[in-house]
Length: 103
Image (cartoon, rainbow, N blue to C red):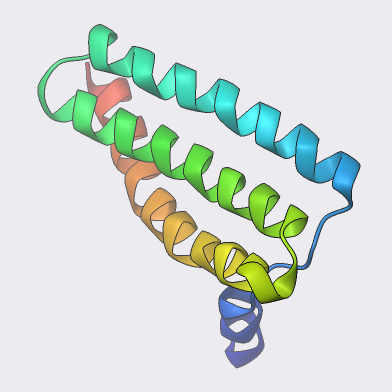
C-alpha cells in the first residue's frame, strides 16, 4: 500500500514534445467543455461538473506545459501541480456522476 502512495505523490515524468503539445490541445478542448457546463447545469450539479472537468483540464494543461518548460524555469513545479489537481478530480468526479445519475 505504501508503494501505491509513493507512486501517487511522485511528480509525473516529462512527456515528449509531441505528446505534450497534443495534451495541451486536448486539455484546452476539455476546458471548453467544462465552461459549457456553466450554461447547461444548475446548482450543485453545476459546481460538481465544472470542478471535475476543470480539474481534469487544468491538471493535463499543467502536465503538458511542465513537460515543455525547462526544469529551471518551473517545469518540475508545473508537473508537480498535477498531483493536487488530480486529487480534486478524484473527489469531484464521483460526486458529479452521482448527481447526474440521481437526476
